[in-house]
Length: 85
Image (cartoon, rainbow, N blue to C red; front, side):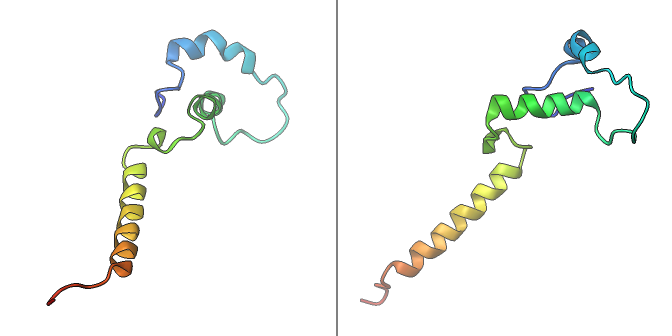
């Protein structure tokens, strides 16, 4: 399974540790997420602390653009208009 993030395990690394996550009890519902995906999520949070720049490509840039636009508008409101002086 290819990880979306730098912190994710490669297929070879997953093969080395997957036996620690085997589920031997047949009861219960089938899991929604693979154990590899869960381990990758834990590694992601552990490594990045959920920093913006580690999020999916385009997400943090879009959020930063929006924040900058709001800041630009608020700054423009607080500046006195000197046009026509």
